Length: 155
Image 1: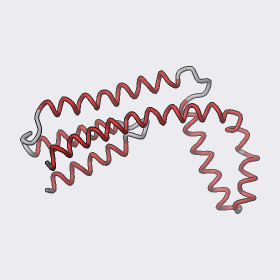
Image 2: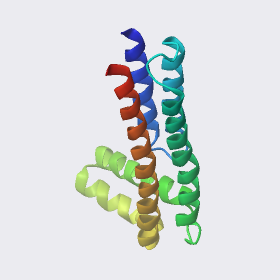
Image 3: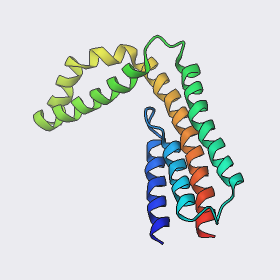
């Protein structure tokens, strides 16, 4: 029973990593499946199941990278600027609100940092929306992999 728990925990960590652009979550899920196979001597699932997990992992990783490159190649701003700029903008907004109060902190932050992000607001939104689509593809592939493994682990 502890093997199923540890493997499920590894797979949930992998599913959490699928929404990140930099982390290979489906490979972590595949690692959990291989560990389960090693601990159970591949009794409960076959090589066909392992092949389908490898196929979904390749679809997620390679397809996600290709889709990400295709969707964001012709935009005038980079993916890093879009993600880092938005996260830093929101973090600074929260910090200034905490230190200076909500009204004055918001006003000061908009005067200081809003000039950098707002002229590119539409492009940043387009890049983030396209990256969200890639993350959804990876998340769906990871979810399908976990469902397949859970069927073989508990049924």
